[in-house]
Image (cartoon, rainbow, N blue to C red; front, side, top):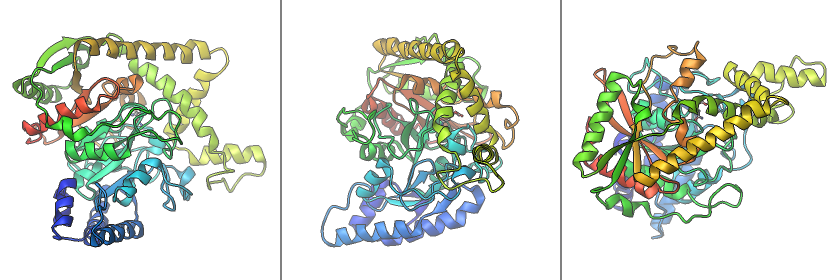
Length: 480
Ligand code: GLN
């Protein structure tokens, strides 16, 4: 068995034909991950015991002639902002350095029930704030494709483990692009489902109205299958949707002849040459499959970054108030009074980006500024969502770049938060509107850096999104 080239279908076949057992696969994958990790720092923790136990359960079910589940034996990594019972969950922060959650996130629970092997926790930006994974308190992640470059963020570890082949799939979280952008930088598939499609129970909150859990995988089918398992109503998250989860495999068999694809003209301004070239090639490929390509406009795009950074910082300042030195393990050793204990714990343990956002968020929510900033940003968000609604009256899907440029060098944008924020321009609108969106690998630059193409569809039209992505993959969008 060759772990870095396995797919979910390959594992199913291998287990069924007894080429390998789940236990063999687990130990092979864990060994490989331990050997590779020093190159990337993508895992913060490997969960040998838990993965081997889950693998034994799969083997036992197979021996009894039972169905071990659609994810049986699949090594999956989980971003470290998603809680795992008994497995340290740090959110990339000193504040949770020793935090061991007492329960599993719903998505994790569902994956394990379907037979998945949780092999480890993936590094990420602190509390998922960042676009390069350089904000992790436990060191940056290196891009497996180009080790002097960032893997993207904030789910950099989740993208890197799939790209380096130490996990067959992974879970990430996306608030403003954190699944699609790293997927694009590392050359893997990354999916941000419709807001509410996947339960957020057990996802440590950053900006609750924007937070999503979603899958990374090596191909569209694997990503769709993983989403199928984790999607669906969960009584423990009131914002999770009741809408039934369709069988994504059916839509992926259909061709795309006659589908109308919209290219939002605002997303092609300021695009780097090399990225633009790959995306245009991708669009031609879709056209050659029979798609009709038209230009559309999302006129409020220019306000998206400002709008996002007001809403997400406001929500973050509130969500992060719970890290007070009383709960969740980390407490300053230097404080003499209670107030000092709060202040010093937060002052010592939060990194610079979290502090910046807590301050900005507290400011935009404060009396007198609430109407001027926060309320206004909410109105702008509604306008941006309206742009998408109007576009989807004319087209079945939108196709855009994921990022204006490919993976940048470690340290290149670290001292300039505004430059870092601007790199989210094409991804945050999807989160603000709550529509499903994904990144599919679409080519590489002359330097060999992956470029991702973004596909967005109407709320809950994941089937339409996967249909287009699968057709793109079949047509050779991947063979770069
Ligand atoms: N890069 C964006 C930010 O820093 C997005 C983060 C995310 O999606 N979690 O907020």
